[in-house]
Image (cartoon, rainbow over all chains, first blue to last red; front, side, top):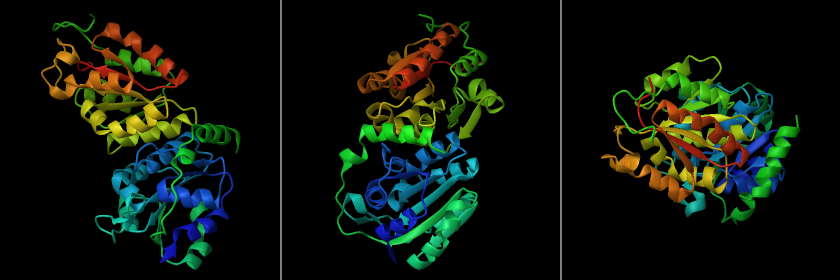
Length: 188
Length: 174
């Protein structure tokens, strides 16, 4: 089992001008690993991370979009797997941190902790699907995961974190949304 | 009132689609709705100037439209009022609190066109305008051809402010 913050530090070494959509615990760990204007952390409703990511990918097919979603969030928007597979954006990478809990809401288990998200994504029709349980293997393959034609899906099997500090005013800061838009439209 | 009705009142789907295009909408995000099925969704599906994205659940549309807005791409969400009600939290967070230009065209299922939505015998229809008012979302009833002229200025206003807007489709377009 991996640690989410360690996975994200590995991921951060391979990121340049991609948009990264992240919420809740994933956003906390991602922003700590890679604070940047191209982080998109204002989702507005739990589960919609993947849908925001699809919109960004559709609107800028020349840029790559990475979604960092929690397992509880994806369960709230499971249909987005089918929508994304149908639209088939080549520039979308969808990573799900499976810690088997609603970590930001008290650490309660998700309804089926061992649910096979990679299998669901494969059945939906993602172009490529991965299932990572080992940090070294993730580190060896992450560059390929990020570069290949999408939509790409990967489950990151991670431990629940120690209690995090959720700075929601910062994550949802309107100034950061404005900065994201400027960066997203002017780079690349 | 243009929508006050009799059987001769018409609502042209082609006119609505023309207004959508005149508003620089590129994407239509939709879950099918029987009120708008044949008059809007079906012709939109075959329209080469609009890209239809079929989604599984209506709140996905709110997130996709938000992402597109960061790319300066305009989208129209075409759903049923039941889907609007199911998406209230996403609309609250993204459209209202984040002040995003979320443009929604909402079919009023089983609404009687000769009545106003507030006077509908259908509870779900009756609560639509009060909910939109409470959320501070601009809304326009589209029940006759004369109402179609409201669409383009309202979409321009939504993207200009930015702010959400809802068009309530009060009869099946033909």
